[in-house]
Amino acid sequence: MQITDAEVETAAGIVQVRCNGEFAEVNLGERQSPAVDLNGFSACWLGLMPGNIHLEGVHSAGKAKLCIWVDSLQALNTAEFNLPALADWNQGREFSGYVLYTEHEGQLYARATNPLFNLPEDSACGVCCSALPLIIGDEGCSVLMGFPDYPNRICLHCEAGNIWVGAG
Image (cartoon, rainbow, N blue to C red; front, side, top):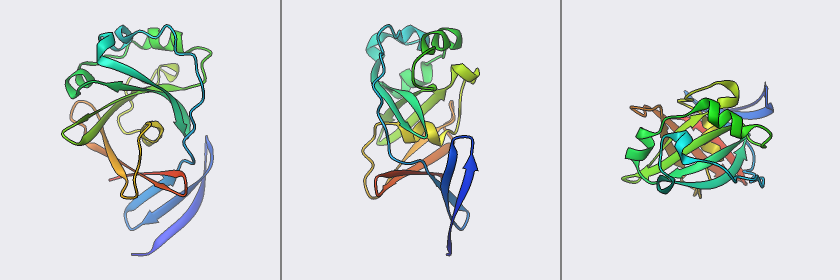
């Protein structure tokens, strides 16, 4: 299989793209973790209890997201995004959306929203998955998105400090 490399101009700037047959992946750069004041965040804006979540902080590879660990797949499935409350609290903070994630039977699952753009659920967001504070080994990892059935597999791997994202 021949690997083709290219650069593509996007709204976020110029990004590297690599194609290998029908599989394509994008280089979203190094993960960044800007310090953001998270005081006042409420789990009820996600339809969850405080004990169901842990704020992992704001992380970015592409665009910054507030990453939130959820204690179970059941809780992740129960989550309901209160867009007005999340958008109001999000004003003036240095991130563009939220990604909730958990692990179940060795597989990562995630859901994402961007209330600043009135996007209730982003079902296949590689930018969101690349922001997750995961340790990505040489073999990479995958995250399932697309609530409620999670049909979208987002593949991640790290190369020379950069996060590469594709779909599988």
